[in-house]
Length: 255
Image (cartoon, rainbow, N blue to C red; front, side, top):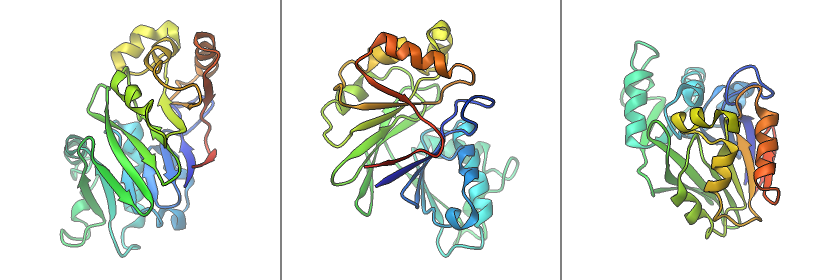
């Protein structure tokens, strides 16, 4: 299983230029931020499934343009997986004919380019030899992280999240999870803002992941522009034994 990082920024103007979007093999997206813009049309046409963590615009804006680009060029719809609440939000506030067309009715209701697939927490979608487990995480809106596994290995993608102790207790016993892609947006000097917005700062993240084995690689994403070095330095200060690395656009991992 191949994972390509299309976007991992926590905003505009920083070291990484594109917002959250991860490509699993060639046919599955985890979130659809501006990172989706690096793919050309033949690559976009290969995407069959999109798993959305939550409805914030930096994680979904690319979905709107994806559907517009592939309309009339595919024989099957793009299936979008998310919690019922996230789907309802996207229907009401994005695909509503005011902000963007309702692609679940285009070209017609019987043959749409967009198919919604509600996915409750703790449910699993299996695609070939890959499984995608939806896990509740703590954010300002309803949000899911995804545990992605094949027969041999896997990783956890947090989406955006703040303190969620139960997820680390669970992942600590998961044998098929060698890496965690986790949001750590703010430095410790912005601890209050991090808590209000339900993102991590280094102090809070290190405390939260205490149950996790030291063999797990932590790939840090959603770093706020201009704070990348501060966040990574503070993580190492809080726990120098952890395997912390900042995620970078166009990195490729194999699981």
